[in-house]
Image (cartoon, rainbow, N blue to C red; front, side):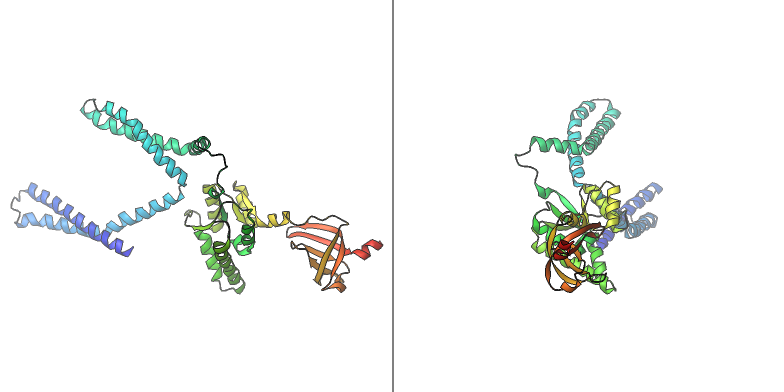
Length: 357
């Protein structure tokens, strides 16, 4: 950027210095200084040339770099399909305007100069606006007419990942199952947030951030689902959750997260959310009252004589009078099943004790 700015300053100085010299030459000529080497002639030319050079030195980078950055930020916010359809619409509108512009060119002198240009601009803007507004309908029509027997390719779909679901780590296992279709998309601001957490002074936050970065690295190397980092951003939104929701709305794609607050905010704004916790609860083993399970007791419970074990899917089983069976496996009979915000919890008793009742 420094080299580009220097080149722009030099070009601006030269161009505006030449313009200033020409203006000074015109002023001197009008004032009657016909001799190009007289002092009255050189004064305005040199003065305006120096003024033009100074002006080019000061304002050229601002007039070129700042608008370019502003245009770049705005273009990033426009969906790719709108850019494509707008370009096609502009081209179609200009082609349609050609016969009318040719006809208008036979009008009297003043009208034949203005009206052909006006008709081209009008039809170009009209075509561009029509194609952008009806982009979805036109694309659906084209896809249905050119569709092949097989369905739409799944890799055309994208799924935005949130910081919480990356740190959680289960996304790496889910991606290996083949249930996720499409491309996992990680915005640059989510990656920056992970890096910020990984550099935290708090040991626990630092550990969580580094875990998230390791999960991303593992996904890129081992996942059967494509994953990529995108530079797409939403400049007018400051917080990462707000950026993610707005980006999902722009791309018309779902968000995968564990964050309850983000889940609710996204749903209120009409964005589809895939919650890993809800998925985990949905696929846990379904058990009924009186059903017999085999479980290994691994630790004490919070109440007296309780033992705690876990099923293969991670469901906690609290066994009454199970403390004496720690480090042993036994058959237990389900007495109660509780569904909590943290997941499913099963209460049971040793099978021989339940049978005696």
